[in-house]
Length: 540
Image 1 (cartoon, rainbow, N blue to C red):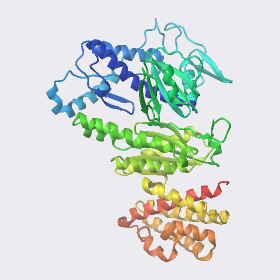
Image 2: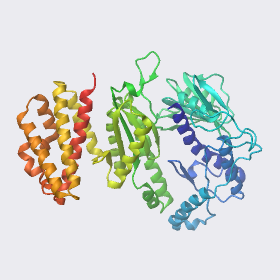
Image 3: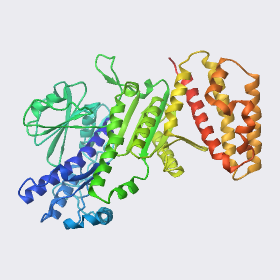
Image 4: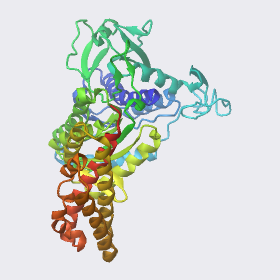
């Protein structure tokens, strides 16, 4: 996880440093400070778009920056820079067409990319000095042949992965980022911050994490830029330093009660782990709609950052999520989360907030034990996210299961979570509560599968649904007790036998007109019952 966090930070900063370096190179060619960060229209989700004056020799500038990235990362990362024009100022009325051609040009640029480090000077990903001198070792993380070094017992990493490993550890709950040129800090701590560095495109980037005074870094950052993370209190007293703030939504819960804060493991989430992947719907279409004018494109970029980066970063610090939700990755309109069941509430609130900006979010969910391999969990969430997109891109849907397809709107997901949490915390006989929840879950799932069967085999569907309803009615009418009453309150009309004929008419007759509404309600209750079962099993 430290390496993944460090790699994510490398990519995030590379995007920003490439824009900064391009601005510097263009200004050098123009002989003055002509281009600034105000020329940037888009800076989010791995993409930067600038409008700059006509520059002679821009192709050499672009090639130089691209080659440096390849050399510094030994071919492991590739930066594509595409430019179009020059355009006349009155071409602004055709800005949409310019952007359309520019987007096609980016694709062509990637296909035709041909710049690699010269083997004689930098070698290649497998080479020590030239094309035919190979390493015998392989990196334990990325698996490529390279010179390796031991970073801890049993873990040997190449230079790139080792750098990301140490940066990732320093940036656990990242506090600040300092960008300078050629800075060499003695020791690994300043102002209580744990430090580590990366060198990219001629800049030194210091990552500071832990419990520290982030603004103390200004004392060693003369001539550089200090960005405080997830805080609006970013202006320091030291002169000669540019101050700013950035929001990064990477968060790892820590045990604050310990003498020194330590990262909590998934195994401390009371046996339940929830994995979530989020991605906004139809962003390509929205971006092209915003490409009619530069001002619209700036607004689009800012709104994406506000909806999916700023708010999500602030939300991760909320008391309810601070010690229970792991934000594994977040960038642009993508996010990967893990945690206890509170991760569902987090994802729901994030999707609801994005809707206020006009975005709809697809959500893939996997609820498993804390021992389930994370790699497989996120493959499952990716598949379910795609199911959510395919089902309806005009709504923010969360998919929990794909056979049958169990989905729920993001806004209702938080309602379900709150209702189930309140019920699970009431106490009483947990065993009775869980038994009723499991039985209702089984029978409602049979009816849900019958609803899917209506299209292919109506007779079999009606028989399956009728049998499940008879079993359900018997259980409700013959059993009683506190646990049953609580679950009936949660499930509502779906488990009240006197309403069965009316509620289940669409599936008993296989009528298309009312089936979709019934399926939506079945999905909601089945998901709620599953969560109740999991939460009722948790130890106090």
